[in-house]
Image (tube, rainbow, N blue to C red; front, side, top):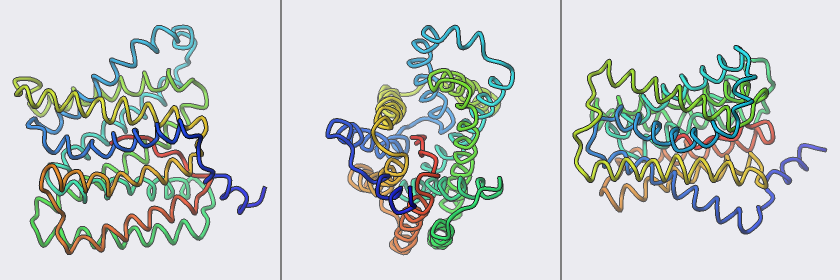
Length: 308
């Protein structure tokens, strides 16, 4: 099959039912950043609870159904899946605080640089990337620099949030790459149970080390924590896994980028939060660059998991 035929195949529209599920999933992940920004609780504690609740709700079921696979899993399988969980914990430990330091629009756009870093990891590993992907990375980097420059003019706090969001993108890329290796030897259910469990334990350790209170929040804060768990962890991630049965990884990766303007619009309407006007050109360039990166990599692109 030629590259053109692969590209056309990758963008075939899904069945109506899965298209609807994808729309619901996109709405869920778009609401993630604004909900966490509005939650009156420590950022690390939010990250812990959303992962602990998500892992608990899915782990119990998958643990019972896949006991034989767990028992047969070798040390390497456990190690690789656990390492993915560590990277996932680092992703949340950096990205969730970022939405409280900078604008939701900037944080969501910058963490989406995961696609760029996934490509760079692939290149370092010896995989050949198309020129179009490299061009998209260059555009995305320029956009990132413009966003950082605009936020630097606002405050050092906003610039720090930008840096944490980029780190979140780096750790997300490491998580995706490691997870792809782990899933070659185990089912998705077993992988996610181990990975999410390790992630939750790692975030719990970080909360305890940083003396972050894990309780004593208002009723509204607990409702928002439950909401972000349902929107991002359950509706978002779970439904994206469902639609991958009929939707190509390339199309999923492209549609997930809608989260960037989606989160910005929700934050503007709900939180009355708008990025500085000087950051808008950077946001547009970054999003355009990421679209080019995903399209350039085509079928070689890893499906971007719903982390946010």
